[in-house]
Image (cartoon, rainbow, N blue to C red):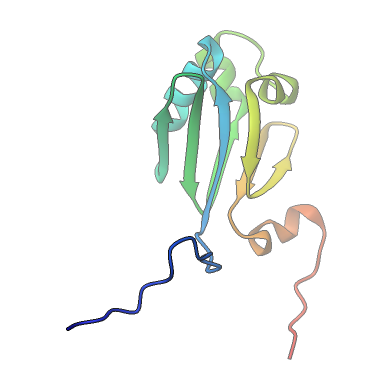
Length: 119
């Protein structure tokens, strides 16, 4: 008999996934945003009946200029908030883009916290 060290069914995996992402509405704007984001390295798109998942490794950059050009409307923070329903990861809103970070340490320079070594 061989046994393996697998976690019990339903056990939480508390290791870092190095992933971040958003859920978009599956509408005309969401479809265009997903198409733009699908061209970026490390970003995965999953289209579901009522929503679109945009997931990525380490960091995702939603550039408003790219999205404005693709959608044909002025895409800004309010347009992003309208099409996005939820997110995971550290979200940073800048004037020209939204950045999502999988690890808060990577967002430290944007959100003003110092990384203090704990011994």
